[in-house]
Amino acid sequence: MGTPTFVNREATDSAALENSVNNLEGLHINQNWLTAPTPKSDRDVLIHLYNATNGRNWKSKTNWKSNKPISQWYGVITDSSGRLIKLNLGDNQLTGTIPAVLGNLKNLGALWLDYNQLKGTIPLALDNLNNLKRLDLSENQLMGTIPATLFRAS
Image 1 (cartoon, one colour):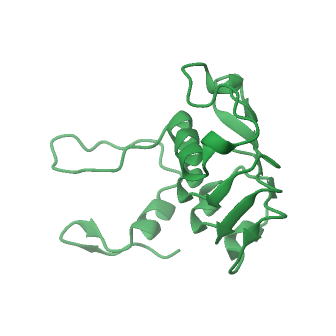
Image 2 (image 1 turned 30 degrees about the vertical axis):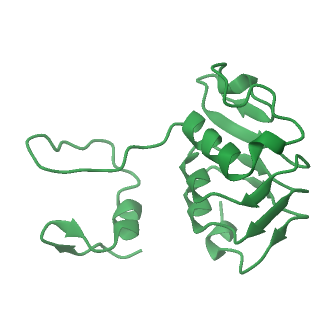
């Protein structure tokens, strides 16, 4: 991506701005009038996925939306710090569309959503999953083009 352009101190291309600061290690913005979206926690993203894909009717949903750590939720594998690294909800009767908010799961290395009834397109936001090594969306009802960014070299 190119360098973002600023007009009245706002980025005209927020995606370009986001991609241009991926290696930022510090940001000091006190005494300004700035707003930014609040990053979603892994738990929030998983709850959004549950709601968006008719979780009440999933085949297996042990502990989903409970107060238990997400490491105890069906299909969820976390690292030692509790961050989601693998999500396996294959053949689990998910319906609806794949929510773009999955792109917020920055530590996710593997995602299995195969053998469900998911429709629509593959969200471009999955490009944000820089650690993603395995993605299985087979045997759904997806259409459109596969985002080229999913083919990036590692």
